[in-house]
Image (tube, rainbow, N blue to C red; front, side, top):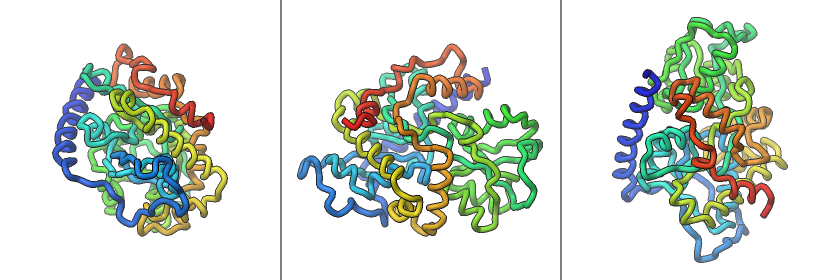
Length: 353
């Protein structure tokens, strides 16, 4: 019953967000101040036929480095795509933008597809390219020279993400696996206010993405004690998604999108973290390049960006098991894989076609 109520609250919140996004989206633009244009000499595949894609990213994080490389190196433009980007600050809001029609493609957690499918509404959203294969958050504690043990979290307070979000569910999954008892997980602080709350003394630990984890460490405010990606193992944290109607109507756009992002992922594999930092730095204004490079290296070390961007049935099974464990769906509410996952575009991109 508790899980059902939580799911209903999530859906009601999503619908409210969808309405807000729809209103706000009328006339809103998504350009990124200070972001670089396409690389010189990167020709358009369609020339004057360049198509503008309204894109919503869940948060701004180096966790999504391949996307920023694809923008900065002109890989999207080479496919004839112009990306109009906004940051939604949450998978629920990114999904709402798709449902409201103010975004064509969103980078969000695939769990949103499951939630929406279970509401039996007219619209469904499908994951068509898995950008990350593990959780991208890090656990940051207060500065100390004492070696970290998971048992140190017993009875402590952890600033985490909203209930039902991937990072929050992964954290709870890992805490259970590690035998942590009595930890208080705070889930009611807005993403953009979490770091400020930790800086002001709230919480013993905080769960954040890069570059915030490295930034807190560099500023002497905290110390990275664990990678939730390494602790949690394989997990389809974020994927590019679109409504099933959009995928059906624009398969050419979806394919070009996948090709551009996969090209960027391969580019990262063949370049140093410092070179990646040089390329994506304009998307992280005010963040030192050495800190960006350190963040990239951390993500590479935990194999964040999979060579195969297909969200497999096995990974989708892991996701749904975590949702059941978290109480956001019941065991009999697991969704058929093919109903919310589209594989052909990522398969073709990975095959170099």
